[in-house]
Image 1: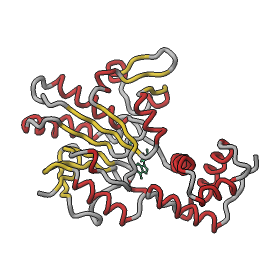
Image 2 (image 1 turned 180 degrees about the vertical axis):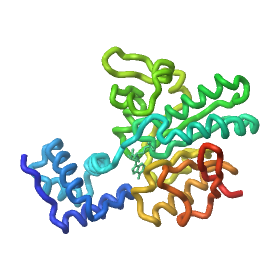
Image 3 (image 1 turned 60 degrees about the vertical axis):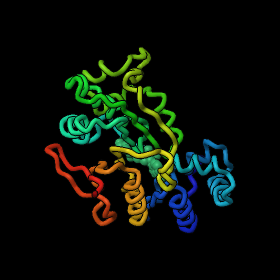
Image 4 (image 1 turned 135 degrees about the vertical axis):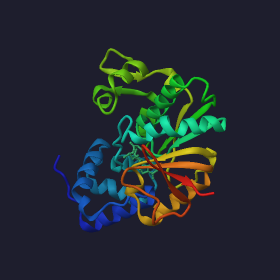
Length: 278
Ligand SMILES: C[S@@+](CC[C@H](N)C(=O)[O-])C[C@H]1O[C@@H](n2cnc3c(N)ncnc32)[C@H](O)[C@@H]1O
């Protein structure tokens, strides 16, 4: 089917709808990307044309369509032990401290968890730490993954990964130790790593209070898509669900500086993390 190009007016209207729905700000230069993703979706959902699908979206009555569009427009790029240093810092610097504080339960939130690699990397790190340091961390651990996309939440819950995803950031040792070979080209995370994890849909534009309070929040590689005011709003509301002295990990190109005064930067040998100010 031929690809329909969005008019400038349609593109602007679409940008507004998307930003209101999930905070993502599309740059002027994303016209081509948006057009091709939307054309693909309108074909998949059997709309006669892209204009028909956008008209339906504009009417605002089809929640499922909005969900599919947000899903199509979000970038779910992730990998195991992404950037390495947050997990090294957990293992070498943070967990020994948290162990001494005898926090129970220890609660960790991955606020844009995508297909689950971040959550299971945290859980594998905890396992490795406990094995190397028996008796140091006796807390029950709860790791909560949330994402706006129901598709990635479902994938994270299924905890099954193909060879391509397995090749992104896992050592052979971790693959053998923490996964079951499904013998069909796929691998499933072992029950002991899934234990204590849970996933639920959550739009970061909405309230977090029902999630409870956390010792550590991972909010990585999602703030980059949002406008400044929204970054401020999200960082300030995350501060409200952090326990005193709680820690926030952001992506490599993200920082609260200039957006929120609730955090102070703390340097560990492995890198930087942000701590809730007292
Ligand atoms: C690039 S991935 C980052 C995954 C992981 N945190 C990492 O660093 O590897 C960004 C994730 O943010 C999610 N996302 C985008 N907008 C969101 C919103 N408003 N609320 C919650 N999640 C959102 C996307 O669905 C996507 O899974």
